[in-house]
Amino acid sequence: GNSVTQMEGPVTLSEEAFLTINCTYTATGYPSLFWYVQYPGEGLQLLLKATKADDKGSNKGFEATYRKETTSFHLEKGSVQVSDSAVYFCALSQTGFQKLVFGTGTRLLVSP
Amino acid sequence: GAGVSQSPSNKVTEKGKDVELRCDPISGHTALYWYRQSLGQGLEFLIYFQGNSAPDKSGLPSDRFSAERTGGSVSTLTIQRTQQEDSAVYLCASSSRGREDTQYFGPGTRLTVL
Image 1 (cartoon, rainbow over the protein chains, first blue to last red):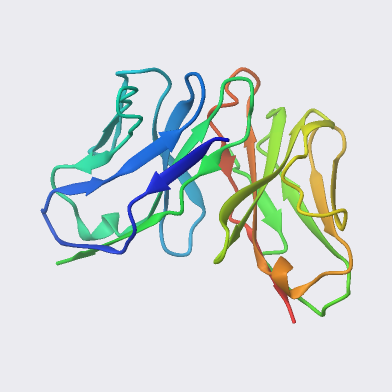
Image 2 (image 1 turned 180 degrees about the vertical axis):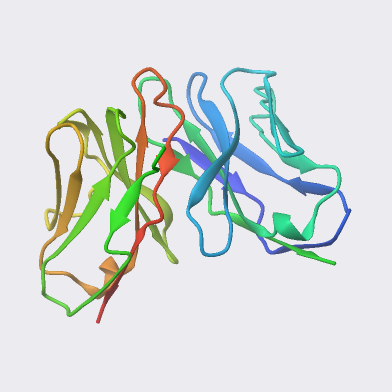
């Protein structure tokens, strides 16, 4: 079946450091890929998405590229801020199936 | 406009009691989803509605769980004879027709079964 694997957290960084959170997936066909973010005390928010191979999703300085050859969708940001501290979830949805399949989430902690 | 709302925000119940959780989707959104977020299982899909029908209820963990949607809007998730393992945050999301890949989530209902 479909699945998403994320790197274990927490990821602890200093402000302005470079961020990578790894995400790989298993799916048949061409799923859509997503990153969701959950800030402390808040609900899930869509951060970015990509719907086909080689697409790059971007938002708020975050980027992720849909790599079909490596079945990956790694999240990157060049310079993190304290306000980026949150839990990040990688997810996929299979064409024709509406449900999202989530990874386990990666907690990011950014210190000043 | 208003986002997805859920009520109650917190619910504490005793084992064996029934609970109802409510979701109000974004106005005009035709698709509605329920997910569950728990420490042991992460984020799991429960059920999906398109209009008032549920073409995918594959994630409901047992027959104690049921959901309905009326008027193409509000949805209620009912858990009968609650068990301690039902303790979790229950999330609702909605999306518009033709944009089902972009789901907007509500703040969730935290259910604690004592």
